[in-house]
Amino acid sequence: MEPFRLGVSDAVDLLRRGGISAAELLEALFRRIDAVEPVVRAFVTVTRDEASARLGELESSGEGPHQALHAIPLAVKDNICTAGVKTTCSSRILRNFVPPYESTVTARLLREGYILLGKTNLDEFAMGSSTENSGFFPTRNPWDPERVPGGSSGGSAAAVAADECLAALGSDTGGSIRQPASFCGVVGLKPTYGRVSRYGLVAFASSLDQIGPITKSVRDAALLLNVISGHDPLDSTSAPVDRQDFTRSLDRGVKGLRIGVPKEYFVEGLDREVEQAVRDAIGELERLGAEVSEVSLPHTGYAVATYYILATSEASSNLARYDGVKYGFRAEGADLIEMYMETRAEGFGPEVKRRIMLGTYALSAGYYEAYYRKAQQVRTLIKEDFERAFERVDLIVTPTTPTPAFRLGEKVSDPLQMYLSDIFTISVNLAGVPGISIPCGFSTEGLPIGMQLIGRHFDEETLLRAAHAYEAATGWHGRRPVL
Ligand code: GLN
Image 1 (cartoon, rainbow, N blue to C red):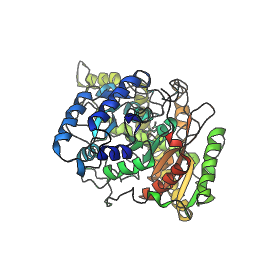
Image 2: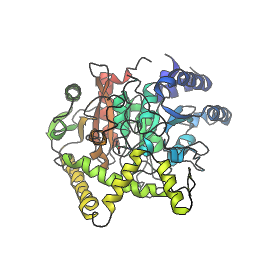
Image 3: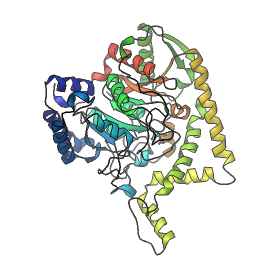
Image 4: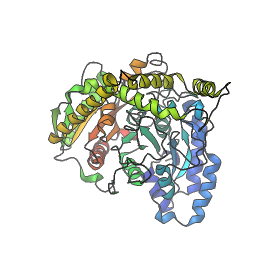
């Protein structure tokens, strides 16, 4: 097998056994990036020189045997701060921003010996579902370059699917890890809110944002979660839970697990092939010993509206900091106010401006009660839906997205259509529970289909165990696009 096709766990083993050298692996990935980037365009920045220097450092460190990810080349979404390496959020306003500090997740990856290959493209400030909102260029789906890779972590998902890295980090506010993973035929895990530190993640909607891995297998997702999770005093929302080894229980199977299928997720608008693939997958879980039953999440119909009020409100507040003074781009103006206005007018793209306006409106005096406060109340109802369901079942299974990857340009002029495509992923963020998307089949057009598993708060262990059992029994994750 060509080395760039490796996943993280296999590469770790191969490196340890001496089956490949760290230099060969790194070189193979850069050759792969050179070969496929003209089509895929997953990266905003490729850190070739930094990676070579890092390799030298690692080789002379003698740390190899103690590091979980020694010399493992990974990509990182470009809204996660990497000290000394540009972090743009795919926004013109941050196009030259070089963070002076490292995010906690990448600091932990560094401690375990990873090599950064580059920073991946996203919808500007992670706002979008197709990566077409990038302020620089759209990324393409490796399975069909006329299609979007999903978003907002489209660069990370495409890079993993195209074998341009062994795995990547993404962020997920309303589906941005799971939806692109589903569109690109790879695994994407959004951990429980609070499981992974967001220190150094550029904030979009702080009550929803979470960092997680995008990988070629469930085992790799567990391995990366081991490294990036755990309490962090630098993030006040990071939960004081002990670290654990999520790879240990992967092989326990699903016998006796109670799996719920929410009836509100199998409704009109769901593509027939997606529905069939997910129903077949549920049948497979049943054959493997799970007990399947129907559950209800009755407030699902309000999730899109609730999310788009809360996420935009938080974004309007978080993005106030880009004023031409503290970070990045600055336009000239006759006075201070004009400088602010010009900087923001030129620096932000249309979707970001739309969200700032929507959020500012929802928070403004007189509308706050009708919109923001009401949305907070509905959020509680959505969270309670999950709590009630989890009294009866251990896991919930749904499609990740209503359709396979759509065409570039298909939804850009209709933001509402774009928002509606997030219907199956956003409730998970509103409730704060963990969710994973894993490949479960292909459409007749050859596009990947993803299944979402949702677990209880801090029960990634059960989530990963069931996902692994399904993956091991079916092997959809092993297919790769021809590029
Ligand atoms: N697509 C959703 C949005 O546009 C989710 C984005 C995300 O998870 N970052 O807000």
